[in-house]
Length: 292
Image: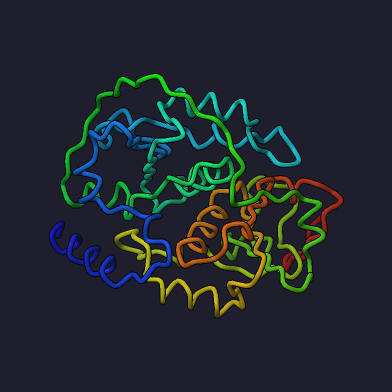
């Protein structure tokens, strides 16, 4: 089964056709570079690090890179982000490889914020923990010793959007609002402890997980991913703002758009997300289910 899994991933990689293939690394490459002093592997799974992880990987809690009490951007400050990266042994010269067990939903948010803060030398492990363990590659429960590092925030590429900017983008020509959530959330049936459910007017749904092979959790080919977005009317000339509940699924959609060649400077993550939008009283909402 593991051998068949590896063959499937190999075939996908060979026929991927990505505009930015450097945004992904495969398990074979990572296995050869775990000991490189300029490579930092980040495990950003929700759980399981203490039981076993990719050797030399360090743990990052996805909650460390979003502050729910810091509107309007909900970003950690540049100083806070610099301190976090330095603690992780990441300098401006470090190649960062992030992985999780869900096809990149957590890893993509780290990719997005690193690019936002000017560090573009970051990639996702294609297939992540799922592929790594299916191939029976080495794991470790040891926590690596980290050398001191200095990280300095610089001007980045991808952008963040505030609620006011999202309001201004509604029905605006040349701007696409993408909703990366489930249909239940979009319909207003699945509130997830948020006061109001529904969707933002003029947004189109592009579910983040539709960009992945459902079994391997590796990314689909560029042709398949491009068709997914083109069928929803999203083209490379658009400015694109993506939202979800807390900025993770949106980051995944932004990552896949970058992977197929979209201009990173035209991609925005509404980081307040539905957690902010649905809990405010001054944000316009469309819903199939009547809201109180």
